Image (cartoon, rainbow, N blue to C red; front, side):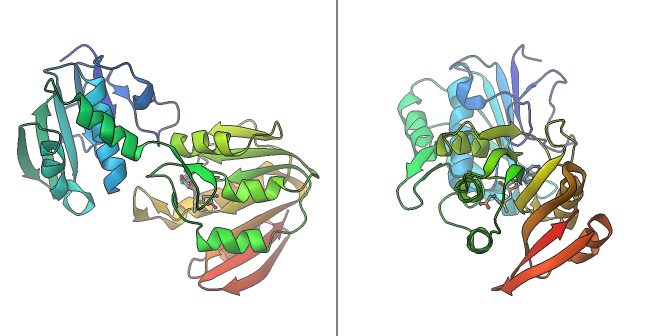
Length: 304
Ligand SMILES: C[S@@+](CC[C@H](N)C(=O)[O-])C[C@H]1O[C@@H](n2cnc3c(N)ncnc32)[C@H](O)[C@@H]1O
């Protein structure tokens, strides 16, 4: 196996042979290295489970090609219906010769990093990198949640935020849209912004230039020592994990909120109306109040 092997994501073990000491670069795995900060031409090989969004996927492929040495092998794979069928053309567009295989509803494309592709690689990196979006007035990046529009659930929660004060947290903060509205209140002394996506956390750091905001790149399914004795938690909880609906994820967020709040603290959350949150909230909180239901969303205030 090559000395310096890069890995992006968690490809099924039977589809890609990856050494145990491969360097993980997925922005969705807290603690992983950042591919965009990896030195150019430093990796001997790379395997990438390509992400589903087109701009995001082309960006990840370009960053992998930037980081690979000339002549180094690249394996990119994805489920057929989540970008797999496009991989071959996308890699050919960099001017590379590619081989394609199909297995278990995935396309597996292999190529080697060729010299002379630097300009196109740089262009694709430019197209998919972090940028200031004039319309939403924030730093954002293709691939992060709702990267180029205000999510309707977030909008509704911002419109119905109660008066908040003291130490709080925004669970699944994204690029910080909701957190910005929370921090508009001077009575909020500290806000921990937590997200599993490093790119979102880095955008949020740009977007919230205040010492009252603390940024935590973490998976909320795991406990975190900074999240205790809080006065409030706000959240627009995710209900997708790796593109699949996962009700358990939002339920894990609710449990984490209940554990993180002091007695009398409040959790304010927006949720999709059709998902069964009340059953999870009720045993964990003293009082659960549905605040408003509108356009497929529901806001709850739950007091510990
Ligand atoms: C519905 S979005 C809300 C984003 C932002 N608060 C807003 O309102 O625009 C949910 C966020 O949760 C994050 N997320 C998903 N799974 C997570 C996990 N296990 N731990 C922490 N954050 C997670 C996603 O990356 C996403 O940014």
